Image (cartoon, rainbow, N blue to C red):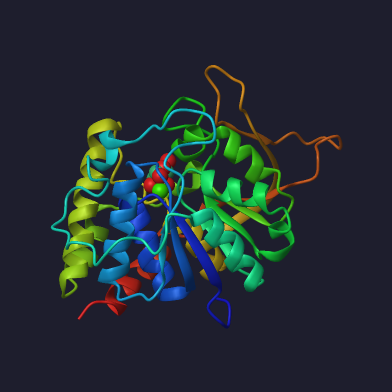
Length: 311
Ligand code: RIB
Ligand code: CA
C-alpha cells in the first residue's frame, strides 16, 4: 500500500458498485473531488446518489456534475440492473444539497492544473475524462494516471462491449490513446469479485446506517445479477477494483497490453480490442491490464472500509 493516501478525482455514475468504490476511496485515498456522469442512471440520479454517499461518509470532497450524455451517441442507462434511482434497494437519506457545480470538466482541468499528481479514477462512461483531456491536453503530463473500470475480454451490454465503454466508445478511444499511465479493470477481472451472500453478511453485521444501506444495495444488485446470469454467485462488484488497483496493488496480477477501442462496429462498438498476439509487430502497451484479484483479501478491504465509517 502506498505510504501517503494518493490524491484522486473519482468520476462515477452511482450505481451500486460505484457506491462501494466511494467507500473504499474515502477510506484509502485522498478524494480531492467527486465528479458525476450519466450512465447507470440519468445524470440527476447519479449526482444525487454521489452526494448521498459523500454525506453518509462525512466526506468534505465536493461533488461536481458533468456530462448528461455521451460525446455523440444518445444517452443510454442501465435501469434493468440498478433500478430507476440508480441505487435501488436501500432506504437512502435525502442529499444535503445540490452539486458544487455542473461543470465537472472544468473542475477536473482546474484541479489537475493546480495540483499535479492526481489520479483520475473513472468508474462510469468516460465522457467527462475525455472532454477534459481534449480541452486540456496538458493534463496528460500533469495527472499521475488513470485507473478505470471498463472493457475486458468479453462484454456485458453486447457480446463485445462492457457498459461504460459501450455508452461512449468515442470517449473511451480518447482515454485509451491519451498516452499516460492507464490501468484497466475489465470484466474479466471484476467478475472474479462477486458480492457472495457470506460477503454481504460481513457488511450487514456491522453497526450503523451505512452498513444497512450498503447491505441493502448489495442485496438488490446481486438479485438483478442472479436474475440475469446463469449460475453467478452474486453481483460483480466492478468499481472498487479501479480504486484498489491503486491502494492495494499487491492484490492484483496485471500485464502490459496494447488496447484499442472499436468505435465503428455495428455489433462491436465499445469493445476493448486487447492485442494478445505474441508478435514483435504488436504496438507498445498503452495500459496495465488487471488479470487477477485476490477476491477474499480485497473483500476484507471493502469490509474494513465500511467498518471504519460505521459506528
Ligand atoms: O459494466 C459495469 C460498469 O457499468 C460498472 O461501472 C457499473 O457501475 C456500470 O457503470
Ligand atoms: Ca459505475
